[in-house]
Image (tube, rainbow, N blue to C red; front, side):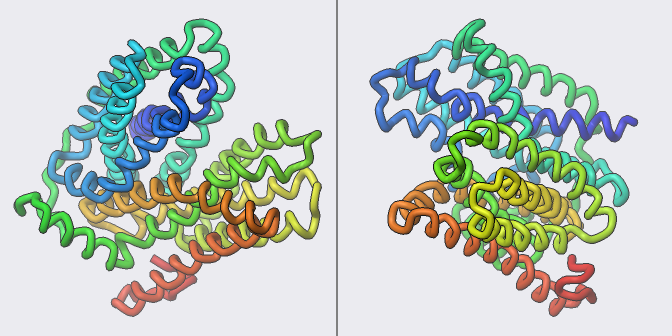
Length: 400
């Protein structure tokens, strides 16, 4: 019971991190009214948080291990609450952009420390479901903002949205301070050496080491191709859906992905290891995109794509602790995952817009099939590399 209470609290902390994106992107029209002369600069209200993840994702993994997972998480929640409270005053746009950039730092700390702690406080039996739940934190948060956001805007405008976010983060910091055990001493990991001075040369060396490791890098590099597709498809796919059902589908489809992860994805993780589940998700997603051509206009066809995304979410996050047994390696793997996820968030939509601009719907099909195929390929190749290094397991079967 205590374990699952901690799991739920850590999941809620992840929702607080996801809200750093959701409170702007889901309610973007309200922000345009606050800053009517913002123009193209308004886009940076979202992208600056992602940019921090691109630049500092792996560094966050190094720092989190040195400071301690519990300590980092609580301080990151407090720092996020302070920044969100400052945003309530709606300062001039240049100042708000600085605050959004600063908000990217505790965001990284949360999304690295929280899933690493989830893997630490759960056992082999409960960990797959806990990591599956974690994999839905972004989707659940965005769905809640889609439902509650308009109500909060009517009640108190953007100021209430920001103030409620700050209050939620403070609440989570207090509850996790009470609920989580103290950080236990960790052995020096193969990659992040707490005794080693944290300098530029060391940081660059750790990037090389982490990204050349089929254990640390594989979940995050594969996740890049999930993230590239998810944000881009949520932006561009509606224009290719039947107008009569478009709004309904784009409301329901993200929920389909969440339910798929918590049901089909969780069940699959009980039967198979995480990497084959993730590979199946990428391959099913690629096949589902082809189905959009074979069965154009069929309402349920996009649903198959989002069901496949549930398998990618479940397998992707659960693979981090399954592949990496050392807490330091898990922290670095979550740092890579955060870094690659933000690269995908930033790059996917411009690439897809360029391809659909040149090739219309065929551009979307090629884009998605290509990148989903690359996600599966990364996992397959990395599993073979791990097998050659002496894991004693097959590349696809019970792949580590």
